[in-house]
Length: 139
Image (cartoon, rainbow, N blue to C red; front, side, top):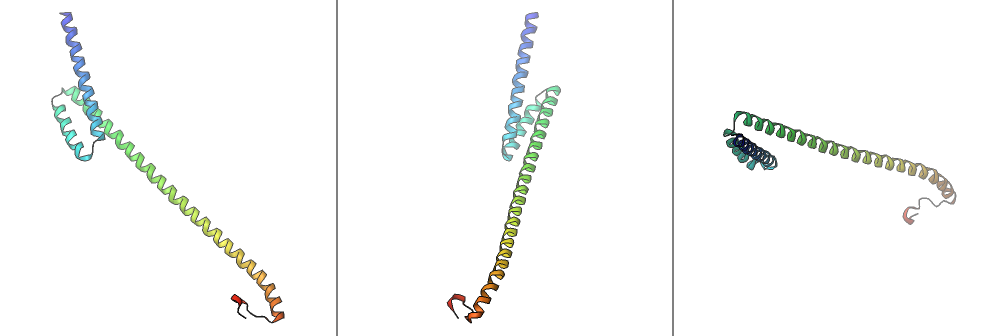
């Protein structure tokens, strides 16, 4: 009798272990499936749940919920990370453009300042000779 009880316990535990692996595999399949396939897999999962005991069914549903919530949280975190990355890239790009604009303005100001300084001395030397405007070789 004791041997029969032990064998029955081992068979029951083996069946539960196989059922648990099947549940785990189904949950993984549900997570990785496309939306269309996910509907079908969830429906199959429901059929499996209906044949389970209340305790096993409750455990499987809890496992599915926690896994799906964790996946949702991870997806949300990945989305937020991507958004932050894009915002940082946009900010860096804007900073680079602003820096480039400042450099161009500064270079333009320096050129204007140097042009007015050197243009004034050339104008004075040129006005003494009466040469006038020598733009592109025209007098």
